[in-house]
Amino acid sequence: MRLETLAIHGGNIVTDSEKPVIQPITLSTTFIHQEDSMIYSRANNPNRASLENLLAKLEQGADAAAFSSGNAAGVSVFQALEPGSHIIAPDDMYHGLKKGIQTLFAGVLEASFVDMTDLDKVEQAFKSNTKLIWVETPSNPLLKISDIEAISRLAKAHGAILACDNTFATPVFQNPILFGADIVMHSSTKYFGGHSDILGGALITKSKNEFWEKIKNVQITGGAVPSPMDCYYLCRSIKTLPYRMKGHAEHAMVLANYLSQNSKIEKVFYPGLKAHPGHEIAAKQMSGFGGILSFQVKEGADAADRLISKLKYYTNATSLGGVESLIERRAASEGPDTLTPQNLIRLSLGLEHLDDLLEDFEEALK
Ligand SMILES: *Cc1c(COP(=O)(O)O)cnc(C)c1O
Image (cartoon, rainbow, N blue to C red; front, side, top):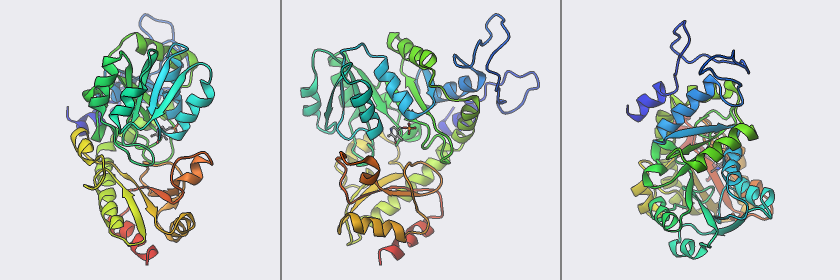
């Protein structure tokens, strides 16, 4: 099955005797004891099974685990490591997960935050206890591109697991497992949900091994699992994911080109631009460049805030990946210790008409 077909049919494991076309919502938390029956919905339920089956197929993995948020998914990987393990993670890692490592695992895990676009720095960061390399590509919010294949070679040479946060690219544009990643992570809150109304996360594994068993144990015993309702909605949303991604990426490319030619804009970060330092690697490992871009406003943070307030169709709110365009001055959301430039605006292009999205900026930048 090709991706568009898989997105529509992969999430329907219909076992119901009525033969519905769509996987029904099973709210029951418990199941009648029978051979091979499900037992209790924290461990498994039909809607989560459908979602996990779909996610594993979309990412070309062997299995998937769904969580109640992207952070719960990411933190589960760290929880599955032996105490004393060392992690190499990007210096611009999604700020919520970086905070997770620093606050929840202080004294338990060691971490080095490095510039993942510099392979020498990654190589130098390895220690005898390095067990996990974490990449996020494209990264949030600077759209930095890491070479998954090259980093997977380094990880293998040192016996470490490679995990990739694939939230920005989605399986429509990038399958990290095909480039050597062992684990793929998603915030399903973003493009999978796609309508800014579901919180969720997921992990997909290349193979069912001992580390995956530990992650499944964190999922089931830790219990940060999504509800059957959330799983149902995610399966429903993912049916349109391939077509939504095409629209998001088309809009982002046009806006990136427009903004990079405007005299009030200092710099645009979008991997689809030839001038982007990661463009060639992105073109190698991605089949599209995604729907997020960021840019710096020449006159600074206040001018950035003024620009945001003038836009009609872009909602000033955090998050990304919905059908509605969202915009925010990112440093304001990340807090005082952020490395993100104060004049940086992150834009999540929605599926409004392209001309409205473009004209809105033309008007606001006059
Ligand atoms: C939003 C996000 C997360 C965290 O996901 P939640 O669903 O908010 O917990 C992790 N990584 C990236 C790249 C994200 O954008």
